[in-house]
Length: 128
Image 1 (cartoon, rainbow, N blue to C red):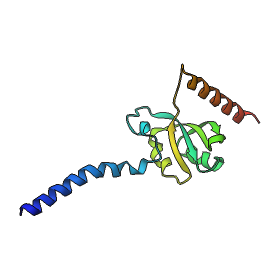
Image 2 (image 1 turned 90 degrees about the horizontal axis):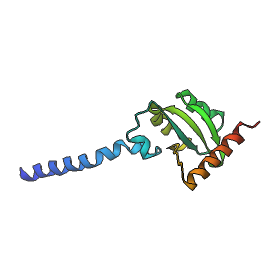
Image 3 (image 1 turned 60 degrees about the horizontal axis):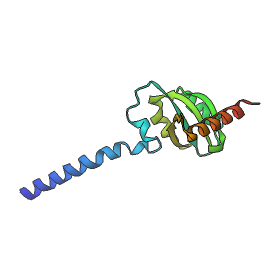
Image 4 (image 1 turned 45 degrees about the horizontal axis):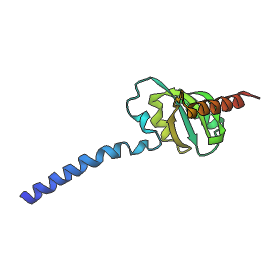
């Protein structure tokens, strides 16, 4: 009787440890800081795709409520503003490699370089 009870306790312990990690396994394409404590209804994100995004990929994001804010062809990605509740569905798309938040690095050399790079990318994307 005690051997069976011990097995159930071990099984319960293992399930308790591993089930939460399985719940987040589907979100391996979403940056951790987008999974924890995002309370804004919309968020600015960079979505990287397997190939340089075309109107097909942009359309998929726009169908989920996203707004294209800039193209980042150098990294096969784009900058979008989109509802937080669309992140999971977009992460399930096989064309999506990774979704990360648009981070602000103000007041540092890296911040100035990132802003200059962003400005150049957005300027190049808006020129005909």
